[in-house]
Length: 335
Image (cartoon, rainbow, N blue to C red):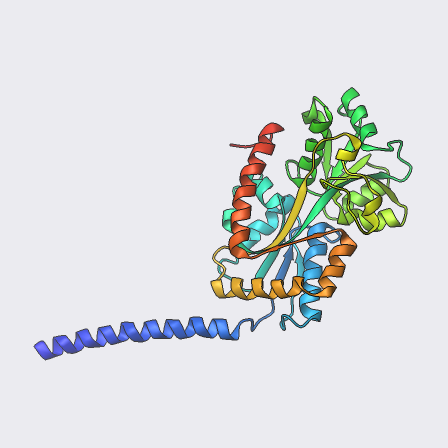
């Protein structure tokens, strides 16, 4: 009886040890074999916007430089200022093959009450770049400077139709309201803001359906060079030194004392395995060192700002607190 009892206990212990060893083998196999499947790269907006451009350039360089061997097709999941894609990521919990690009709207759509999901519901992989906002008007616009726009808004805050490529209370909206507040516009809550998806905002501007487009700087480079639009200002602290945007003044140069930085980085779904985060962050670190990536950054006016998962997580937490204060200032913080 006693021998049988010890035998059962021994078998139970051995079973646990074997299962633990098997678990270790599986984890090791995951790390060794990863990646072994096709990735899903997600742009949380339609084609033509900053998110779409960024993640497509990432996929291109990773593939062409042979840094990642598996396919990285980009899927557009527009809607809700990034909220639709954020909700989709929740259905991919712990998936090592789903990667999305995000920027300030990841934080802003939560702080403004558009979604209950937040930065805590994704896994930071790496910050890649810092971009800046731009304010553009049609080529035949009567507004020659941001000072002209602000003077019109001071007289009548509803006189200028503002388009953006993010939802109300998100990045494009906030960067314009911040500029308007800094310029001395009193009734910033009455300013007309019309959200569009992806490249639709630019189309509306060129078609004369809106008066001004507030968007990412990269989205304005092509149509500015072709003469279809005029870019009145960028939100950088100092004038861009190289490329086509070097001729565009900052807000500060026009007497509007403010700036707005648009960082962009990659995230995985909640619970993304550590081995996937490590692999991807190292792959991205290799990518940002390539001449191909540096040329893309220069062409689009992106400032390189790489940091890995740990530092990126700290940056996100600190930035979220900063955005809270900004939204509270313009009356859009949902507590």
